[in-house]
Image (cartoon, rainbow, N blue to C red; front, top):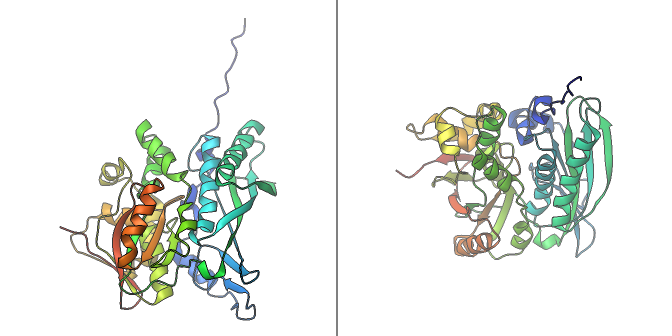
Length: 354
């Protein structure tokens, strides 16, 4: 009798040259590309365009409503198809929440190597995304698919916000406290996963963080003292903080050690990092002042690409405790103050406590 041959499932991450938000173009390359974009001055209802590298475009519909529109997609950061779909959908919806908006529906963006992946695997990716959208209270109302060389999945996400409660990334004020809602280290954990050096606890931490919806962003809209918000994704904490600084014409200071996901510090000290973290530092390191004693691994964490990362909130000191109380009550237990905004040119100074 001939013994049956069991086909080994294809690792999703083996089909992609990069994964998650680490796939993004480097900040330097993206800025060069967008520098040639035409100004949006001819469209008075366009409240947010490409000018400030904000999280989504915003169009005023009327005096009570503005439409928030964004798209986000990437290649697999994990091998489990359902987890991949959940992470990608959570990440895409984050841009809506970062503008203070509530999502209303989504469209799926699907590119799959049909000859390499079973139909069941592709279906599980889409089901994972739909599961997250259902948790957010929105339907996946359509989309578009292509046969592509590498697996790609994400969403077009649309939301609504009152024009007067819109949160942007360029409206921070000097003296504002910077609060980060999720711990860092997603890139480090995903790199360890790809190298088969991530244990079950580390994988659990990775999934828990990247599938936690940033719904609290909609509650921050109109909250006293909240001046600016962005989500921390592919450019790392420093990169997205710098976007805040450039938009507001202010300097930023990182004065507290940012929270890190379990196991990240040990992996980073052992040399685990992503290529995207290196590209990020090469793109904006000249705008950052580090203390001479800062070890390379700590710098890498600050540049670590965060797939479906947390929100970075600039809030008046008088309102900081209220923001922390809110975020903690919504399940963002790692939320913490990490620095402040100050007068000065667009730059960041990193001064960790002794």
